[in-house]
View 1 (cartoon, rainbow, N blue to C red):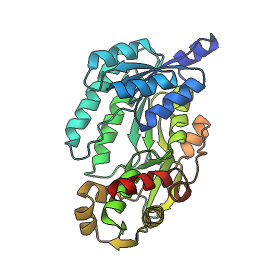
View 2: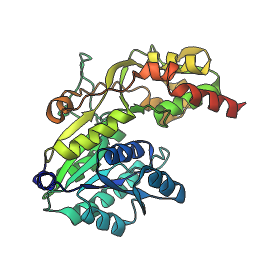
View 3: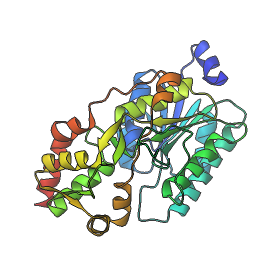
View 4: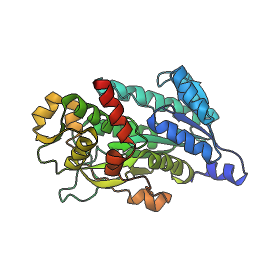
Length: 324
């Protein structure tokens, strides 16, 4: 825990969070849970629709985005803790430009809180870690993949975590954050299965991926604010035993389409080069550090169960009705 947060809590003062990406999938749950724990939240929002979502949770919307650096600096300076979730999810865009915008946004926040001890928790991803040759779980010190988009995102992560005078912490999220029928890469694969009338996995589908329930993600970000030490990085992972074939079969079952293997080239053509690359990664990030140092543990419903008989059943039904 930062000395700043410790002092505020010791005085019985209410913490105010500033959350970027607050009206997004993970951000809304972070906002909901933070308010439920007695904190106040000011959330960055790009639209009136986003404003209304935040107001419904009891948060105060702040109009702006990652390019409104004056807004980011002002809100960072006024907050007791900052959770940075905003990210440009246009995977067809130039990643380097996306990261440049992110770095500028984080720099603006950091400049406003330097030397204060206020925690800044930034979202990153654990897909950038090289898989262990023996198939075991990786940790936060595992070397990064070479020439990989996720490696550059870790560069962005380090910009906030290791900046001098900043109490920075990073959460490396699983490739597949799920739950509450939310959007993300699972949602994209469900859309593709409906569109193609088949659910695909690449080669034998034996590679594994990491997944995390959105509610567990929210609890982890808040735990990092309250307990995280400066400079720490944590894998945000719930399960690492999900094979890509298991996922494809679950999607096929909820959508009601056949499941089959495809070559990497075919998947690139039918999905997109980016989605094929992403769905071919072997990612097994250990959550041991987050459990031990933050006292956090994942509690969300099992990934496959949530697809087959949980929150993605109505999602699949709705998408099928829209397609037909």
